[in-house]
Image (cartoon, rainbow, N blue to C red; front, side):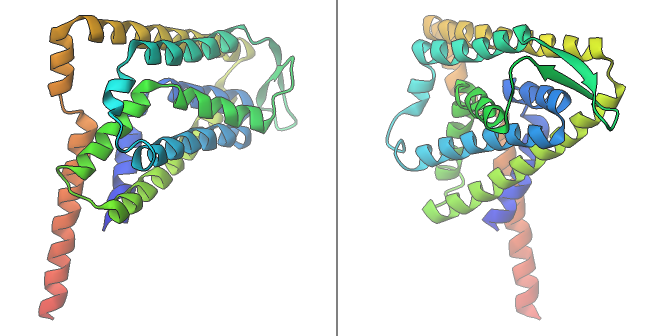
Length: 254
């Protein structure tokens, strides 16, 4: 049951809660490099999620990560890293040409390999404190209100992470199809827009954490607020549990 719940939650959360810097990077890489190379970016994002979840469930399980992730210095490091990637994306030089299949490709002045793209996806997701807060919220929910034990939690997150990767790969595929609609000027403009979005997100990350730390009312409101994603997971878990129990009863009476 937990594996199925994890897969369902992964699909739902990927559709409604994946519009951060990693999402824009995923779309930008799909359009710039095509589906095959963008797969490396999606794998990098997934690997960072796996590392974060593993650390939360093992090494950092007794650490108050909520306080750590709401630290201004942590936000400053993460925000500066994401903003730096935005500046790199904005200033990246190259030229656009069509390949043998007629699809546009942005040929960078420096060679960009799959390992570079994978690392880019990993860091862009890993340096985002909101991603850590997101996973903290889910793990807290599963440990508290839902009451999953160690084994059940690992099974749940395995399903969730696999489903999330699958959804990211689907986004890569759909975004790569947009190449046929783009002109060289539009493609270059899209890259620059992505760079601006990443810089803006990095600045927002730092400013929001400063406001959080300096304004007691904002801090109290945030601590009391239950993320919408955790409400969805709790609802889906309860629904799947009811369906499973109903199915079990039916089989029993046969």
